[in-house]
Length: 64
Ligand SMILES: [Zn+2]
View (cartoon, rainbow, N blue to C red):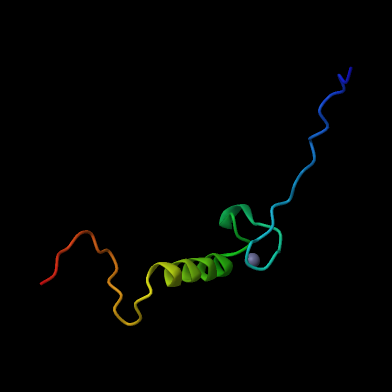
């Protein structure tokens, strides 16, 4: 029987998915705002494949 206590108290230091540095609590899950911006930029580029024609806060079809 294996009734040993769980030894999962290992502190896993999360790493920034952008640069791999240790994550700062203030910028989770990134190490800094800079990396957060980079990730956001990538995300936006993937979502909006329309250059130049970017309309922020586009809630619905409200074209004039
Ligand atoms: Zn980073």
